[in-house]
Amino acid sequence: MTLPLPAALAAGNHRPMAGYVARHVRWSCVDGVATLTLDRPERKNPLSFESYAELRDLFHALRHAPDVHAVVLAGAGDNFCSGGDVHEIIGPLIGLGAPQLLTFTRMTGEVVAAMRACPQPVLAAVDGVCAGAGAILAMASDLRWGTARSKTAFLFNRVGLAGCDMGACALLPRLIGQGRAAELLYTGRTLGGEEGERWGFFNRLVAPEALLAEAQAFARELAAGPTFANGITKTMLHQEWAMTIEQAIEAEAQAQALCMLTGDFERAYRAFVERRRPVFEGN
Image 1: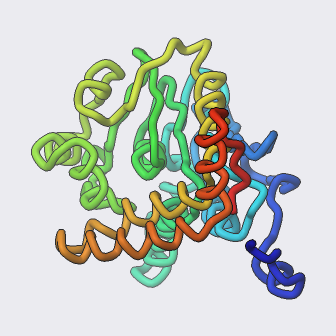
Image 2: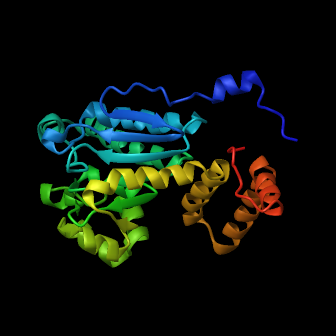
Image 3: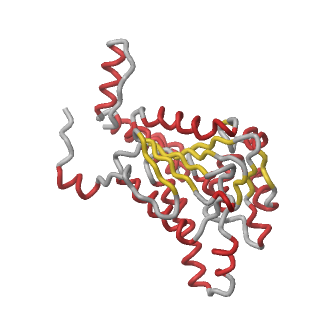
């Protein structure tokens, strides 16, 4: 029998996020599924210095949020995200020195690092424009639902920057292959929804009017699963990129043994014996 977490340990490491009040994005959480919405639809949901920082801090905080089991990342209106706001970000960056610019680029990269490090699966619901940093947010998610009218563009090259932004040169080739990633990063061209599904960038395409509902429904399935084990799966998917096959096999042996200590593992066995669906509790 697994004992409950001591109150003092829980107080320092469990910080519920369902009631979080966002300032620069929109946030809601129902039954363990959080929906994080980029909410500037009149300008295709661009990011600002403030929203970058809030996203970084929010995803970092999710590492300690036992009440959030899956996250849907979406854009308000008919678009996902047009990238960094030209007037609020790009303009102010002109003329800054290297130390100040590095403060900005490190902050943007920390958003992706925090998305990868949080244990909850992140599902991007991508409709319409998904460009620049918006394409990066979709790329950094664990799963991507798109629409036929999705327009994804890693357009850094078109504004005089390298394609190596926020981890793109590491993450994108692993999603769609080295050659295809190179084409997108060298040219900044738009990847349409159907092509994106063929290339493996999108897991599936959904009708625009059903996109958010279907993404949330799938997230609820994930949230109803063995969430501790799901977090281990996400961790291993990320960490094993830097391992040999032998190292990965041993790491997975240790990870699976840890999952076998959970109540959810026993619950699944009891449900199988009793010929019913298991009800997981995430511990």
